[in-house]
Image (cartoon, rainbow, N blue to C red; front, side):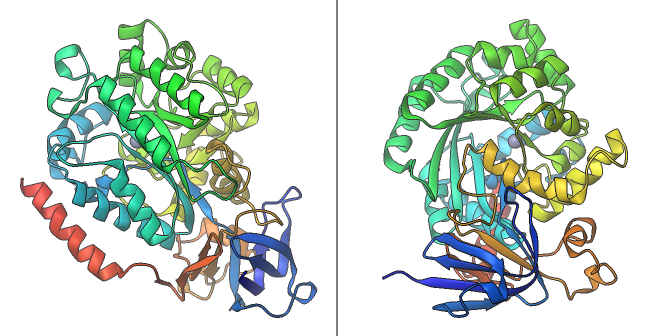
Length: 451
Ligand SMILES: [Zn+2]
């Protein structure tokens, strides 16, 4: 039996369709997990099994988060890591993360996803690259299933410890054969290549400074033999560039190309220091970038040349990055920071509110190599979020509610539909008991900080 859902009376519906239509008094008709029709309220069916009255709401496609480390929600604002740049920050956190457990991965993933969903996100990737004790990616995947979020689970890895010239301590790195074997197991167990898939696996060695060239190449081979995407960190700051030049005698972009890490099935986080040749390479090959403005500011990594990337044709999505370097993973807030940071770097016309919103929807979908999310149009996955505009934060801005969503104080969603299911109603997450999850999360975070 199919189930229908009607969202009607939207103040404005932002479709992100081919014409970028914004429909006043908009409506969306959904059957099961797929959008059937989009238009004005009077032009659509008047009834459905479930009806959401979106009067006074801006309705947009669910936001797509392309970079995160959800376990880091347990290690926000650790004093020793509050004020360092990337390498210093990592060096202070690796020993804390060495005590991570499977239970911690599960609970922190629920927490991070709750925060994302409430901030307008419906699809997220997560890059879990540290597997001490009994940690497994399965713990994250189970959490995504419970909370009802569309999930690209990236099997990260570190294999080059300090004794071999890498950055992480030897105690947190894994054997390369074991990494590849576990990654293959995860693909075979969980990867769903079908349209509207809720669950995909990504092959994701952590970064050039924590894995070998061999693992980068083998990872690419494994991913391509199964048709799954590749993800890593690249060209994040000047020390990252220096490491690449010293160890590989190449720029990060040259190294990525040498390892087979370019193509529409690859996306790299940050790329703050990607040079012009790298931008050209990414544009030619369709290689994606996850832009994480808050994290880049937090770690003083610099301003990624996003305007230049987009103009060149590089697919760019947004990411909140891990909560140890943000430390507020608000997806709509990230859209706002993306717009503001481009202006700091490149002038007031470097990015508009609507362009920033496009990065977080269509851009993110492209980066994750999907054509079934990121817009509200017939045949697309039913991922739709609704923001209410009656709060003090929007007062005086209602003449342009779409721009207000990005310019004004970032709001939480009032309703969220993910894969046709109402996951947030009237501001309340329906799939998990959030206060219970948070209490558990905070207890585990304290254990980790004191260990
Ligand atoms: Zn990251």
